[in-house]
Length: 496
Image (cartoon, rainbow, N blue to C red; front, side, top):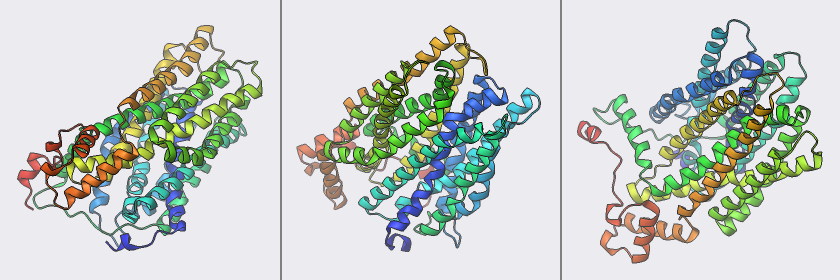
């Protein structure tokens, strides 16, 4: 436990934030350009391109929990988490570059190559990002410091998205054929790999290793991990949060995947793609402090709804643009996109720690790791689903790579670009009807948790605290404050 007694200084927070250059940047570049690369450069169909991403997420379903299990039990002189950063530097650089090689050969060879390349990339991604997601909890137990670390991480993540919007297309266009994609991949592969040296140097883990219980082997504990994941869905606040999260993030993924197609083929303005996307991202970064301030003053629910409405307005405005639209109108719509998107993406991550507090009232445990691991898997799966469905939709509307599109295809593209994100945004706003975590309710919840930790009896709960706990958890009060996450099989086979 020695690591947790260290003082987390600003330089440590910055070192921690460096890690999400890879997380935020690689997600953004893959989300905006990988589909285009596979269809317009490699020559795969939109459905095949979407399938490649979907298969990578099936692999993640097994990979991420396994890496988490290994990092929980690993014992080395370099710690149990950070050692992965050293091992991951070279794989991160190589596998990201492999995604952008414009290989030649038969159609099946190219399809098989990119399946394998994407599986390898996801392996490298999980190798560093799963241990990375535990560091805030490993380095400190102080809530305010964790919040600051998360805020700095968001700045790095969104900053990486801006770099991913501004530079890749410019690099790609500077070289003939598909060589620009490969050069871009190499440059960003190095950019994503090298910061892990700083993360390793500036952070630490607690040194507390999870001991393996007697007669409880890997597969039983692996099964228990998925039981823990399943138990999270019994948390009412988590289910509401998940609906809000998926609505905003899938809308973002659909928008990002279609953005190039809309500008290049519908608006016939490919030359403004990089500048417009960069403007959206820099607006998003600049609005993070304001969104944070509003969330503190008005709460997460209202901030999320305001942001989603502004973002939806931007999507509708942008979808109404044409080849003749002025740059003033384009950047006005982009301003709405960036300013609204800032809160729509930030607020769900801001809510997650409060969901973990609700879970403690249910299970008696602090399970931030379970929720962080589950959300990491859901995030990657949701992007895969979005990209796959975009590929299917492009095929169904008759999209033909590197060709003039028919009128019906262009009409379908406009509808996809506007209607699908708008429906998801509306669904997210509707989900907040059941979002009950307010600053006042949260204080009552924490006070009740502390009372029970000190040995307080269930029958002594106040009517107000009982109502709040039942509203947030979805359980009757007498069912709360119990360990409901251990399977009978493991309980029977484990000797404590």
